[in-house]
Image 1 (cartoon, helix red, strand yellow):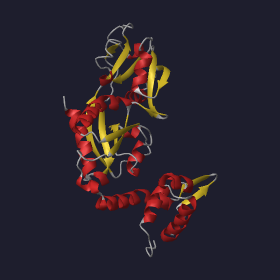
Image 2 (cartoon, helix red, strand yellow):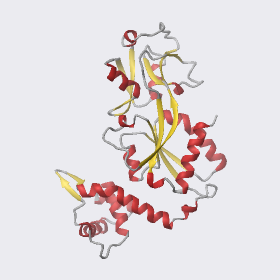
Image 3 (cartoon, helix red, strand yellow):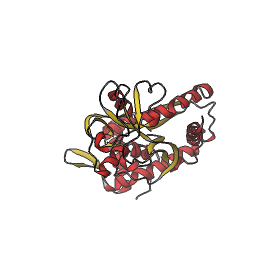
Image 4 (tube, helix red, strand yellow):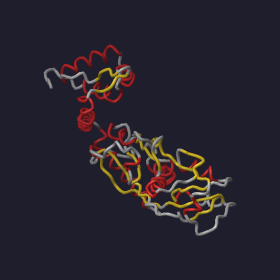
Length: 305
C-alpha cells in the first residue's frame, strides 16, 4: 500500500465503491460526478496496488483484495467520524438521529408498539426505520447500512454463508411454537404427526431460501407436511389459516388477544426448539453513545411488562 499523498476523502469514495460495486451508483450515493469518482478510483488503485473493481463476464465485481477491505474501511471511517462527531456526547432529548433496524414482522409486532410509545412520549426528535429481515441483513449490519438486526438464535437459517465475525450479540426475547387452525376447524386432540401431515399446511419462508425453525425441524425429522401455500412472514401465514381448512406452525406471541377469536391453538405434535430472538450489531458500535443508548432502550422494553 502506498500512503504518499493519500487523501482521507478517498476513503469515503472507496467505502461507496465497495458498497455499490459501481462507479455510477457510487457517484449517485455521494452526489459526485462520475468522472470525479473514476478519477478517485484510479488514485485508489495506485495506492492499493489493486484494481478493487474488475469485470467478470458482463458484471462488475470486487477483487479479492476489495472484498478484504470492506470491514477495515468501515472501521476506519467510523473511528474518524466518532472522533469528530458531536454525537459522541449523545443526548437523546436533543438528538434528531434516525436508527435502522432489520427484523421480521413477528419481532416488529412484539417490540415496535412499545418502542414507538417510548420514543414519541420521551424523545420526540428520534426516529427509527424498520426494514424486513432478509438474507442480506447480517451483511448490511457489517456494512453499516443497518444499526441493529433482530434474528433467531439459529442465525445460520437466515444465511448459511454469513458468519458472525465482528458482531456483538445480546439475548432479546423467547417464545415457543404452536400449531394453529381456524376457530371453526376444531381438530381432534392430541394431534399426532400422521394426522398433521394429512392436513393442508401453510409454510413460512422468511426469504427465498430461508425456512423457519419449525420447518427446519420437520426436515431434520423427515416429516413432510402437505404444504399448499408459502408465505414470506408469519402474519400472512395466520391470515391464510383464518377461514380455511389449513393449519400452520407459528410463534405463540403471534396469537395475541385480538387474534384468539379467529384461531384455535394446539401443541405441535413433534419437538421444535424454542424461538430465542437475538439482538445483533457491529462490535464497532459497542461503546458508541447513541447506538448503546438505543439498543439498551430496546432491551429494557423487551423485559418490561
